[in-house]
Length: 72
Image (tube, rainbow, N blue to C red):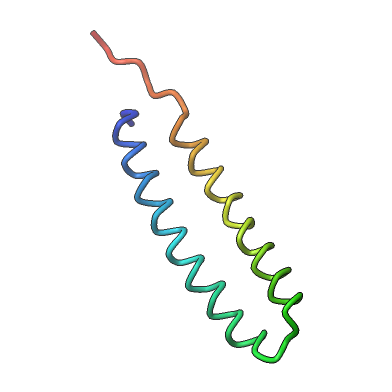
């Protein structure tokens, strides 16, 4: 797969990942943390705010993988 196409696909995947992850994390927070103290919210949003980086790193690693050399 050409590098430019892989980067395009990876960029779209990262955007989808961030949007879906944010919706899920916020939905879980609203459903479970309604009456929790402020420090519980702080811990939850700190952890979930950093957790999306792991799958994003895998996508970026895949995007940067060298492509096949072209036959000339």
